[in-house]
Image 1: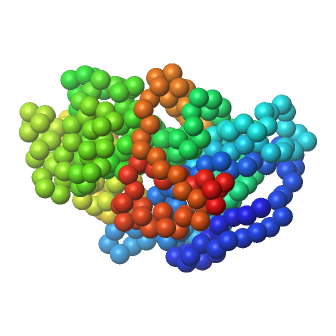
Image 2 (image 1 turned 90 degrees about the vertical axis):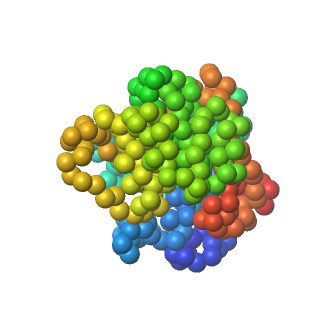
Length: 354
């Protein structure tokens, strides 16, 4: 079994070779077909999340131990299974739900393992998909992707699920209401892919990059604003006749975007904070009460939501966001490309090409 491992935060990834393990109990050994490179991987690689004001959360303090094989957006084929696994189809690609919990707490037993206080998430707290094989603890975490190419399906496990979960938190929206999406990276593009299947509301995308905004417009009929050349709050207010945005999803969530998102909210508006770029939100405390605002976070999604999303993609034949594939040894380079904001859509590793 060959993998790229993080052995020191902020240090180059290192190749590791070990005997391919044998699955036990309900475990399933899978051959990795495709693994998305996610912005969350960048935070793990660097070893921290910025909080703003020179404050940080260190991932080691959140239970991330090294060495670690990153990669939580995985499509893989079953190679072998433990003795307690029922009937499963070998040599067929499945999407792997990575947000695995302890299995016994109130969050896990109520279908919300992504909220578990003792997480075992693949590629975060246990070894993931920057490898030729991955061990999955149970077949219940496998999702049928018939009709969807693995290099497209893999990123639905995080980017797609995160965007879908955030969109659902703003629903329902009526056709005369406005939804603003901030950040045309992988998450924002995923949201654009799904949004018309969920609402007929007016949709406005905000970003600093004209190339990414053009890619968004090619995907779906949405309006765009370049925030590097405009006062976005003023523009949104003008576009909505002074009403503001009924919902804003901030896929960047730094100090500038979060404060802009809050300032453009309409009365009864909903602000969903998703991105992990870091910063401080400055608000006058009476305003949320006076305007009856909802401000909330959104972290990935449940297994049920991921199954819903895959069915939605299949039934609606939704057009994929841009996806490019790379050999596994490009992982570190791609993390730097993501850090520099150079990736349009999603970058996906395909171990067979290494």
